[in-house]
Amino acid sequence: MADNTPKGAERAKNKRGIWGWINPYHYNLERWAYAFQRITGVAVLAYVLGHLGDTSFFVGGPTGSGPSPSSWDFIGTIFENSFGHLILVLVVLVLVFHGVNGIRLILAEFGFILKKPSKIEYPYKAKGLGSGQKYLIWIGIAAGVAAAVWAFLVLFEGMG
Amino acid sequence: MTDVRLLVQRFDPLTDEKPRFAEYSVPKREGMTVLDALLYARDYLDHSIALRFSCRQASCGSCGMKINGRLRLACYTQVEELGGEKVVAQPMDNFEIIKDLVTDLGSFFAKHKQLMPYVLRSDSQEMDHPSAEFLMKPEELEKVLQFTYCIKCGLCTSSCPTVGTDALFPGPQALAQAYRYLSDERDEGGKRRIDALDTAHGVWRCHYAGSCSAVCPKGVDPALGIQLLKRHVMSGKARSEGAEVWKQQAAAAPPLK
Ligand code: SF4
Image 1 (cartoon, rainbow over the protein chains, first blue to last red):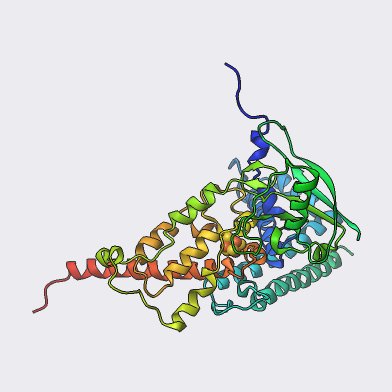
Image 2 (cartoon, chains in turn cyan, green):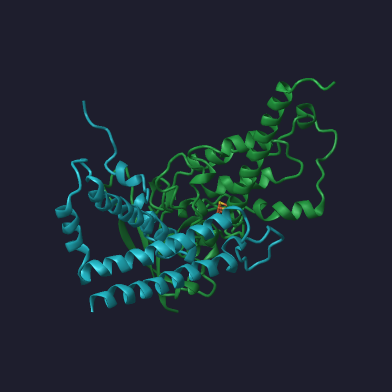
C-alpha cells in the first residue's frame, strides 16, 4: 500500500521538546533560572547517585561482596587531583544555586513573593515576574558563586 | 525610503520535507508593523505566503508568530522597534504548522474549553434562565480583570517549555483562565475545577519559567495566575479533604448524651 503520509508531517509537528527546556535564549530571567534549575537538578542527581555508589564501597560495594579498599582508592584517584577538585567546586556551585532557587519556587507557588492581581495599565508589567522573586534568583547565583569560591579555597589549599 | 529585508519561513507539510526561508525586500514606511510588511510581500511579491490575521489592532489574537526569535503579535510589532533592517517571521513554536506562518490552534482551544471557562453555579435553573445579571463588586472584578483581557493568541502557550514536551498539559492560557474563574466570587465550581487541575498533567507541571507572562501582549500575566492557582488548589484540597476527614470522624463518633 502506498504511504500517503505527507512529506513534512514530522517537521510540521513543530514541538520544541527538551531543547525548549534547556535553551532559554530570547526569554526572561526566570526562564534562564528554569533552564539552570533543570540542568543543575540532573547534575545534582547524578552526583548524589555517584556519591551513594562510591561511599557504598565502604560497606560492601554495589555487589555486597565486602569492603573494597581498591575500589575506594580508585574513586580517590578520580577526585584527588586538580580536575576532580574543579568538578567538586562545580558541584558546590550548582547545589547551592539549585537549593536557593528551589526555595524561591516554593515561595512563589505559595504566592508569598508575588503581588496580587489588580487593574493593569499599558505598558504592562507582569507582576508574576516582579522584582521580589528576581532578587532571589540573583541571591541564588551570588550564594552559589560565593560557596564555590570558598570550596575552591578549601580544596586547593589542601592540595598546595 | 529604504527597504526592509523580510525573511519568511515557508513550509507546506504536504509538499515540502523541511522549512526554508524566502527573502523579500519590502519598502519601509513610518509606523509600519510586521503585519503590514507581510501583507505587502503577500500582495505585491508572492501571493502564496500563508498567514493569518484579522483585526490589525491586537484584539483578535490571530497574527501570533515568532518574530526575530521572540513570540509576538505581527500587528503589534513595529518594524522600527526591531532595528528596522531585518525581520524574520516564523510560525509559533509548539503548534502544528498548517502552512508557512499558520498554525493549528485546535488543541489550544480544546484545552481552554476543557477547564470550563465560564461561571459555574449550582442553581442550573438560574444559569439557563437568569432572572437578573450575576452582579459583581468592583473590587472583586479588579481581582480577575487582567485575566479577562486574554485574546487567545496562543503566544504564552507557544512559549511554554512544558507544552513543548507534554501534549496533555493545558498550558498557560487555559490555566490562567482556570484561575480567573476559580477566584471569581460568583463561581461555585470550586471542587470540580480543582479536581480538573490537580492531575498528573495539570497545574503542577508548571515550573514557573515565566515566559508566558514575558510574551503576553495583553498584560494577562499567566505565570502570576498559575502560581496563585497552585495555592488555591493546595488550600482547596486541604479544605475539602479536611471536611471529608471531619465528616468521617463525626460519623464514627459516639452520639452525644
Ligand atoms: S494569556 Fe496573553 S499570550 Fe496567552 S493567549 Fe491570552 S493574550 Fe495571548
